[in-house]
Length: 446
Image (tube, rainbow, N blue to C red; front, side, top):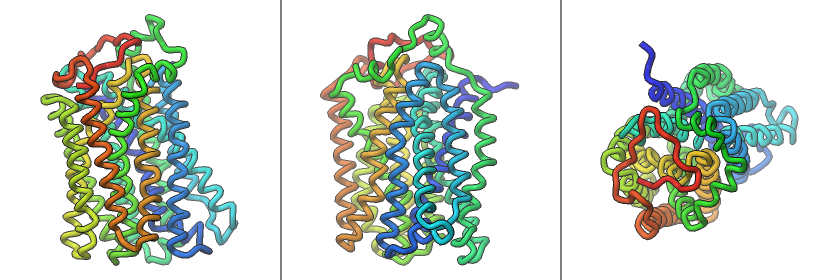
């Protein structure tokens, strides 16, 4: 029996975002553990790490370009086709990273090619996250908006699990010298196979009834981004600040922890990778639970609780790691796996519901990609600079808790001082074939 459309879409967006995040986070893991040696061997270990994280940050600079580009065509042409193209861009660029010669073979051109492919990765991922959430929420059945829209959000931890598991498995099966010389390329080359799976899933889905009706009525926006800005600078600024905490914590947890834990605390690479994988499994598995709670009690309450939980745990995270005790270090990692999914499960919905249907892809992409740059893209670089300058994790803790405090405050202001219609209602209901909303009014936050 054929699965209902909303289930097929949820599965397809989960598979696609998982594979795109696999590609993107594989680069992050390699930048923390490999790239300084392969592409910046003439630099000191600290400088090489900064250079590797700089190439990691380059991808974030390209993400707004991808977000605006794919957002425009996603609102003008359709969500499905743009998501297919974004997936192909990620797959091709990641596969090509796996065949770049090292600095020892072609000198300057090695890091130059690395940066170029990282830019392509950023453009591809820039069109992914917002579009997948929008497509999934527009297919969601009545009363289960958050539950189904959390599926593409699960792609972040699922991609991280897959990337680290493949990286860990390859590292464990090969001698250290072989892994550093050529074994690290295997996970990148595997992208070619994985993306084909994602394409098959994506090509099988359809546009939502709401968007199709919008097209039939001739109400497609001529300049979606311009119309999305009509939501107003106050709301745009507040939702931007509200979103940066989750992004920053994700990248501190997934990327900086690996460098700090191996170089300062003396933990092995495999010990930390395994801990991040276990925490990410908890993160991924609990997201539908938080989505279901948001459908019952309201999206805003879950999101606010999530940002507060991140603030509390980030204050304790590095002090726990710094004990050097493996059991306590795992407690710190698993705590992140518990705290992160709360706000992350509904973050896409909180953003997308600010924008009307005709400009939803563009508006959501604008906020998501800008918050990723401010919160996530620079986080490993800033954390590394603070750590190397002060030789302690205290400045890093102050930095990440300050970001979480800003998001918590912005969330509270957005939800209470700038109320929207339906402010105290539970998550909005969506029919299996929802009616499109007017293009002139923003959708209320639940």
